[in-house]
Image (cartoon, rainbow, N blue to C red; front, side, top):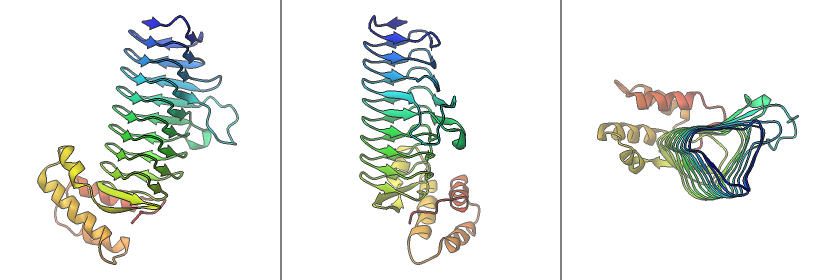
Length: 260
């Protein structure tokens, strides 16, 4: 373990093996940092009230503020939480808040994510595995980003929206409805435009699966079908794959509505 002489570490902070804390960083409150995680200079982690748990082999870059209280007027200093998994890169001046009691009390970042500079993750957001978020994108409270989502720079996400796995959000998009999985979405407000076939290839999907996903998404996006009719037509496909079943369930369970 290596803690710079100018860093301030609170009495209740727990540091794992081979943790590095850089100059002028401040870690306070109920914070646990896992083995091999590196915190660079001028980072603030934790607060007087929240709980922060950071896993192994993460890198937090200069100026980040991790685990501050939620920006919510109903927050009354409850002991809510931020959980961050393993192998994440949290770049310069990223801000991530703890949860609120009305939102389940926990903000989560899973594993193997890259959050580029100036990204803001608000209270109660749930960020999946292998998510990449480009610079200055902003997430309001309660947003769900599923696994393997790629998000361009300067994107904005309304509260409670859900972005399905393996989708791609083009830069400068404003998202106010749910984005179906396996799709490319773009615009203000963003709508799904096409299947994310290149992304699926890069993520190792088989050609047959990509073809079936492509056909299903065309039924959702092309023509003048209602969403209900598109779901019926996709459901009628013989022997649908697990990917198609997941797509159908995502659309059926959408609370914000599907962006199309």
